[in-house]
Image 1 (cartoon, rainbow, N blue to C red):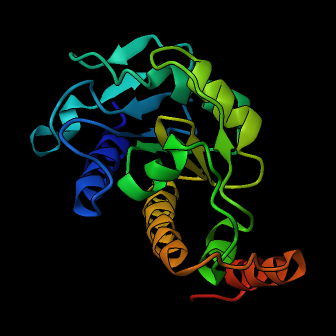
Image 2: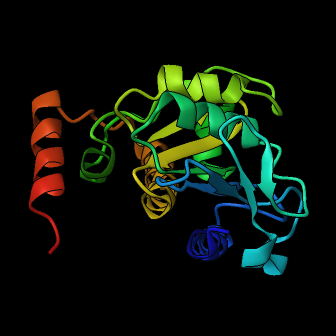
Image 3: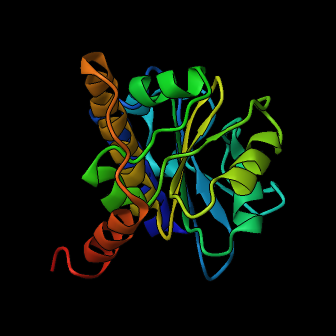
Amino acid sequence: MLEALREEICQLHLELPKWGLVTWTSGNVSGRDRQTGYVVIKPSGVRYEGLRPELMVVVDLEGRVIEGELKPSSDTASHLYIYRHRPDVGGIVHTHSPYATAFAAVGQPIPVYLTAIADEFGCAIPCGGFALIGGEEIGREVVENIGDSPAILLKQHGVFTIGPDPTAAVKAAVMVEDVARTVFLARQLGEPEVIPEEAVRKLRRRYAEEYGQ
């Protein structure tokens, strides 16, 4: 079932350790199949080098396992909460990438100090509140606090990113860590200035409408 999506989700998981966003078995990627509404997600506690497409777990939006022999990720309930409340979302990523999670640890958003933040996110990267793992609480924090951003930090936890498809969500996760590292380093030199909102809107519009092919 959903062979192509299983393959895609399996391959996208390999991007997370490649970019230094996860360690050991932490983190996960999920993707929604638009035709069935089913979600494909990583099995719980399986190391990245051991992942194969057939090990991915297929669940419905209520969390019932449709196909798969292993337990789905412990973050599945939060992923599904986001999918149920954000019909525009087709992919979700969760990481504990170190620089972004350092901001999460102290409950700080990442302001728009860089044109790269304006381009990719169009606003400051918000920080939601603390929520326990295993239920829908984290998903609720994401939905209530992410706003128009494709990324959010969860206080004392880590990073969640969303996108219209799984690849876009993974890209957002990569970019969150990249800008978090740069902002952290910049603050060692002084306090950066926030880019004015009008300039942020122009940068975001240019990036969304003109950048690339």
